[in-house]
Each structure stands twice: as C-alpha cells, then as structure tokens.
Image (cartoon, rainbow, N blue to C red; front, side, top):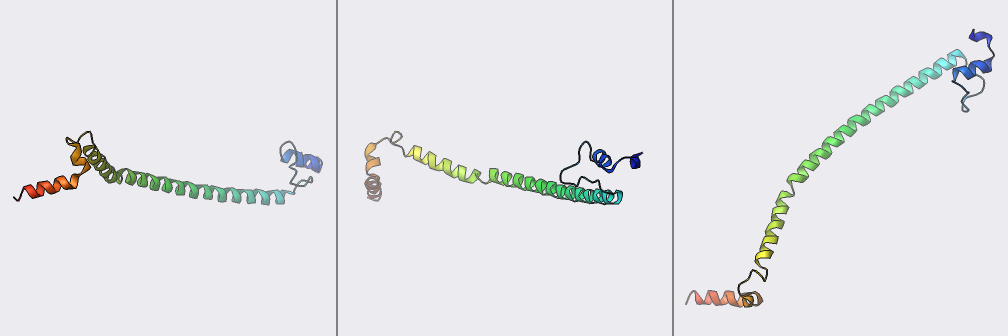
Length: 120
C-alpha cells in the first residue's frame, strides 16, 4: 500500500506528477495535508463570497448605468429642441431668406421707420 512506499514517492503522487517547488520535497503528514486542504477550502469559499459580492456590485452598477443612460436620452431632448430653434432662427435670418438686403444691413433703422410711420 501507500505506507510501504518511500516518502518521496508519496509526495510525488500526492501532488500529481511532480512536487511543487514552493512546497518542501518531503511530503506533509496526513494531518498537515488535511489542515492545508481545510485552509484551501476556506480560502476558496472566501473567494467565492468575494466573487458573489463583486457580481452583485456589478449588477447594481449596470442597472445604475442603464438608469443614467435612460435619463441621458430624456434630458437632451430639451437642449436639442433649443438647438433646433437656434438653427431655424439662423436659417430664417440668413441672407438668402431675406427679401431686402438693406433691411439686413441696417435692421434698426428700418424698424424705427416702421414705428415712426405707424403712429403718424
């Protein structure tokens, strides 16, 4: 059985094919191996807990990002309409649309003329 073999062979077979360089060449006793296994299991469960927490955090951040994106799509509708109004007014005020070029050059005087002509 296992106990008839030399310690090196047991260490080699316990670790797979070759002994891990970080561990000593002499194999650990059963109790030590059991303790190491428990340590690894606890470490594994800690990592799984951390992974679950990160997944929950990621999910909440994704939901938050989706919420902000939804708000982002709603919010620019007002600035976009304002931008549209500015563009439309610029088009209306453009020289091509104006019937009389002199009114564009001197709009204040033509406005004054209209005001003066109306009351008289």
